[in-house]
Amino acid sequence: MSQPSDNLYSQPLEAITGFVFDENVARVFRDMISRSVPGYATLLSMLPVLAQEYIQDNSHCYDLGCSLGAATLALQHSHTRNNVTIIAVDNSDAMIAQCKANILQSSTNTTVKFHCADICDIEINNASMAIMNFTLQFIQPDKRLALLSKIYNGLNKGGALVLSEKIRFDDSQQTWMTQLHHTFKKLNGYSDLEISQKRSALDNILIADTVEQHQQRLRQAGFSKILLWYQCFNFVSILAVK
Ligand code: GEK
Image (tube, rainbow, N blue to C red; front, side, top):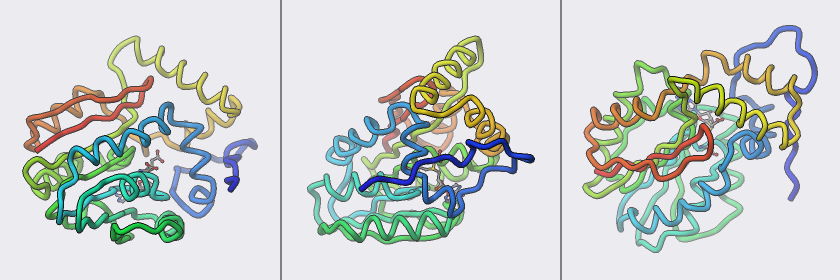
């Protein structure tokens, strides 16, 4: 089925307001994320490997900032454990509504529960896996450690957090990576105007950390096994095991 394409920033806007995950974004989100995040499809296609390794019988998996449920779908169809419940959480009504519709279309033995809530407010327990794909970057920096500590405390021994993020760099690599990212977006059909208006909309809303900041915060939260398992330009995924 073809997806509506993202042209939200294609026309000159008089004023650029801060980016919000509303109905307009939810409608085009699948197209938006695949044309904006280098390596997104590959990252999703590797989740079954991590699921096979870390999901435990009789446990919960969390998809934190689930959007349309891409990670939930990847897990739901791949693990081989018994009595697993996936809990998909997003604080955008529009995203959760579409996520429910997407997931209900696919039938498996895994139960999926949906919560429209702030991930900083939910309880996490009996978790063997938590996936936070490109969501921590939208959480206020001063709340990030508390959220990771809560995830650590809610994981069972041997359970894993998959943390995927856009990252920033401290030095000249920042300019280099930004250039490569823009080229990626342009090759995916975004104009210079779309790229620059979207960047302004995300200013102070998507706040990226360096890989070192992520690793240090994960250690502070309690994780000792931390692995940068995937990187595509300025987007990474980190595996942290309890
Ligand atoms: C994917 N994981 O396709 N609480 C809950 N949800 C939140 C919060 C919060 N405090 N802040 C933002 N969100 C997905 C992609 S998108 C990434 C995730 C992006 C939600 C927000 O509503 C949006 O759906 C999601 O986090 C971020 O693999 O757009 O770059």
